[in-house]
Image 1 (cartoon, rainbow, N blue to C red):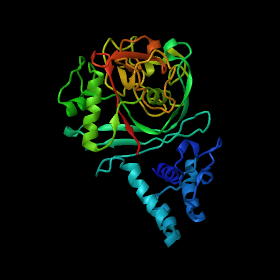
Image 2 (image 1 turned 180 degrees about the vertical axis):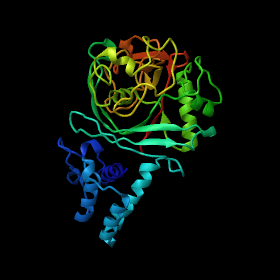
Image 3 (image 1 turned 120 degrees about the vertical axis):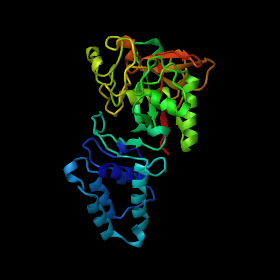
Length: 351
């Protein structure tokens, strides 16, 4: 996608999150962040046109970009041109293997500050054996208010800063787990259903095996990353708003699940493009459980201090009441326990 390529170039030039490269009117501010890294005016205009907020103002075809780049080539601009072509490889091939990415896209959503987001869709057909693939969504970095004053264990509400990262589009499915681990412990069988009846240690083992295969840091998300990704720019009870009567459109939970899991991706996604963040299975986070947020990290990292052997769960599950599916709701389980409500999704560092 031309827009995503342009914004990726700007991010590499400035080392600034894409959400912060635009003002409230959607106008580009990237030149304000250049530090000892000047860009020629004609090349800057190419970037501007690639990253225009309005689609009709962008390039329509890649060959139009190449024509403009070729007309500006000089010795002093060769480094910049190398960066553009290299960015295309970064954008569509974050694991640096061949035939890895099927497509990428960008989707706009409204936030209080910017009105845009940067989302990549990655379909990895080579990572797992047997034709099983993973799909990850690039979550833009940003700040948000984490917690909920209505629940003692979700207090105090505090600001957290999140770095960009990838998160699984869906919870890990049974066919994915079977392909990597060789077994399927799930109570409710189905290739496209989320794997469940797994412990926190099982989830970590799955991530470690994928990491060894790819050389990338697949892992469980931190609790802060999970909530940021679930909210997708909202501060409401659910990522779609506060009206819990609408929850059935977005989640499998106690009122509609028939007391079992369901194949992932059947309900409506959030504004980051993530499915099943509410309901279906509880999702493990990497953090140790704490009774509240006093002393919690504010940089989005996992809270690893403390002696509690329980780990954080998020999202609710197939038999939950609506309140347990809220974006802010927290639960816990012993790291070695495995039950049919318990599943997980993977995160991945953007490097």
